[in-house]
Length: 69
Figure 1 (cartoon, rainbow, N blue to C red):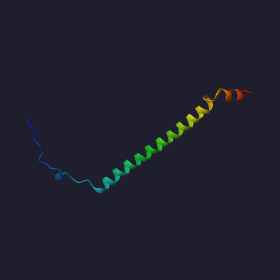
Figure 2 (tube, one colour):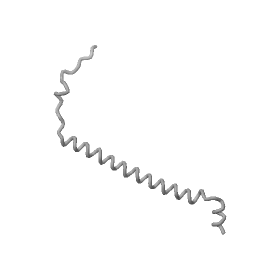
Figure 3 (cartoon, one colour):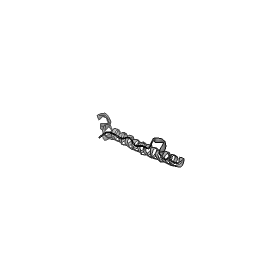
Figure 4 (cartoon, rainbow, N blue to C red):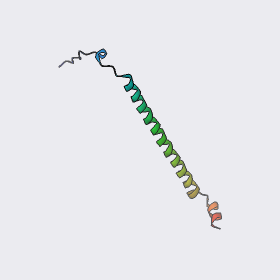
C-alpha cells in the first residue's frame, strides 16, 4: 500500500494563541528554577556530609593520639 499524504497542509493547522506559548514557556522556566534549587540543596548537603566525614573519619593517627590524651 502506497503512502498517501494528507490533503491538509501545515498552513491549514490552527495557530496556537500567543498566551498558550507564554504559559508554556513560564511553566518550563518554573520547572528549571525548581530543578536548580533542588540540585543546589543536594550539593550543599553532600558537601557538608563530606566535610563531616573527612573531619571525623580521615584524621591522621597523630591527631587521634593527641586527642585521646
